[in-house]
Length: 251
Image (cartoon, rainbow, N blue to C red; front, side, top):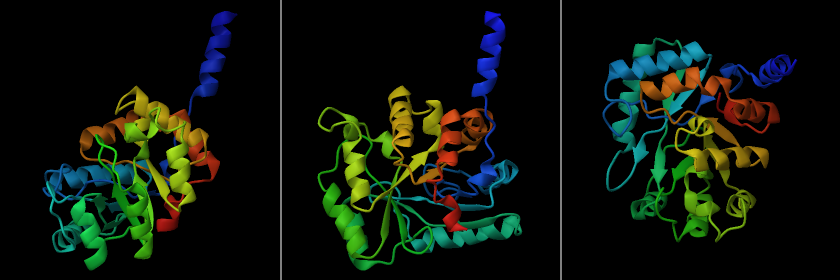
């Protein structure tokens, strides 16, 4: 009897994610050779074909723009994205934006350049994984002053925002109150970046603070994990069912 009950309870917890409900992957690194993502057009096409197989309708890939490492520009990113688009022959909508790193050159770019957005004025940006930025409120204000909508990439991966200095998720709640959207990496939900990151990701979903979900796919191993493990994530299903996700607004 106990084993029967265990089996029944186990079945109750099983899910199979319908990725077509997410529809748009808006954070990945699929343009070859310009950051720490795809290394070749062959790999890029293999990953994109994987997204098609999962049921996605659109991909907006987001190469890093970082002054010290990946000095990408629209002039580098957009032609390569156009080349990939031609190779896809219309099998999926494909375009490029960028993931901007919060460094000194980011503020200069905000002042002097037209930045690459996901759609409309939606701007994806990230902080250091290691050191808490001192200008969080300032950079949010400046992004908004330039009439961009700030979307913070993978907030669950910034450990300093959940340490004792802050109470629970208070820093993220404060950002949301300031008009910042939060984008979660789906690989965080399977412990890919460690148990603490997974815990924070689940807490963010429980607190209804997540606006966007995406792959942050860099290579074929990431795609394999999405197909084999993320596709069974109870928390991803919970997020989809919440009605909070904005991914389809990018179609």
